[in-house]
Amino acid sequence: MAGDDARSGQRGSGAGPLTIKERRHLNPSRAANLLIALAVRALPPAHRERYVQEFYGEIFGMSRARQVGYCLTLVVHSTRLALALDERDPTAEESARRDWRCALRRHHYVTRNNPDAETKVAAFYEQCARCARIRDRHPSGYTAIGP
Image 1 (cartoon, rainbow, N blue to C red):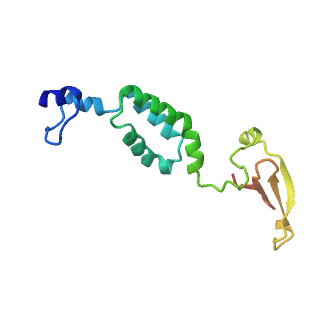
Image 2 (image 1 turned 90 degrees about the horizontal axis):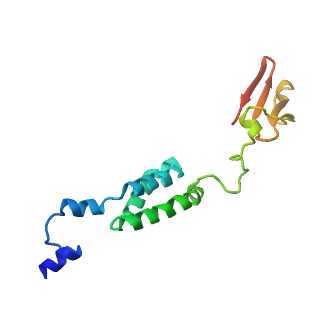
Image 3 (image 1 turned 90 degrees about the vertical axis):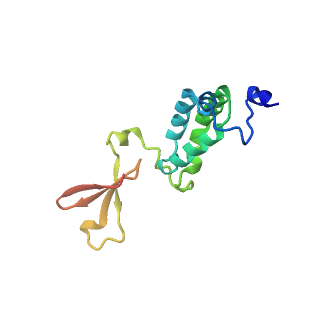
């Protein structure tokens, strides 16, 4: 009857507004909030807002323990989701893995020939053999172009 519905936590459509205790139960726990923030941080910035809303929608109505468990799986699999959402061509060169020496600006430049150059001065350029950074030769010196 009416008392049984109130005790079991099920509410009818005409039951009125939720109490503070019922609202607090529906809110995600602090641990779930932290885990969702951590999972979303691994995603590309263009997709973060969408997945925050999606993740909160999925944990709505779960118990606190299930929320934390589900959010832990989100964190574990967030790198796979980030790779799936990455818009780069998967067949392209692996320029994402930069050599640590190039990160420290210790490039290994090799002289290359530019067949489309209009003058002999611009016919050669230098390119890093590890990260493909290009350094043009100019009469006044070098200028770096690229990543």
